[in-house]
Image (cartoon, rainbow, N blue to C red; front, top):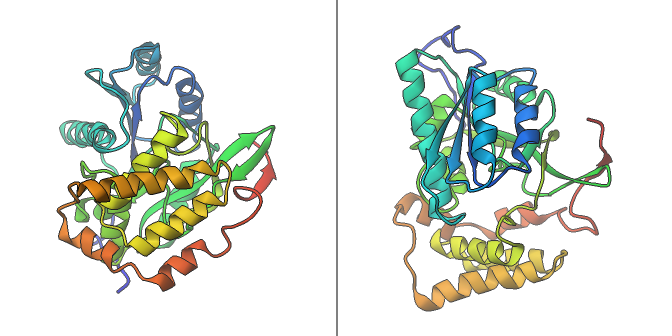
Length: 318
């Protein structure tokens, strides 16, 4: 059943169209300055931007301090140093940011209608958030949305094709009511997928608006190298209890695209976890959803995704 948001009445005019933004950052001295420039240059700026420094050992803390000194709406917290990890630790870092931001807003009476997450390797077009917020304004049942992820290769933008009914992890926005109704940001592997599933099961619409551009400075799951990243992705597929047919389709899809070894890495991550009978997610709602994941849905998700290039290509215009 489609969600019909009422919000208990009229939206508070003090919070309408306002959003919070959370960014986890670890050793991002190369990317963070450009990312920060794209956020501070947004047509619609966040009411609060919390950058979580995950124990960086490069110049990231100094960059964050300079940003805080320049922009009053930028705050930060720093966590103890730990190895980079895209499983439980990544979601823990993000959760620290969400919790800090929500508490800061309560203490300082900051009103907001939306909550956003942006990785520290993602550069946004100038009116990125303005365009997304306009989509939310036009559809009260829209719960989570993002733009499309692109890579800049020699001045041409190539989109990383994924299901347009699934918002990307970076550059995503939750309607506040959807965020809280789905349990907020959980400390789990693949927290964005979990949030998507819970929102979908509660009737919220999900959407990736591919014409709204965000440029990722490195490949998805490549922070510690693609092999390591896709082994982790395979493990996460096992952890979430994904249908084995869905896993095999993902392996095939990855194996026919360059770099071709990512399919093998993904399969190894899944099979090695299955052989060891490692722990799976305890949430019965998530396990049930992925166990019942139908082939018809899978087929619709991969249709049109195969081609010589990774996605739509266009000249960069920003």
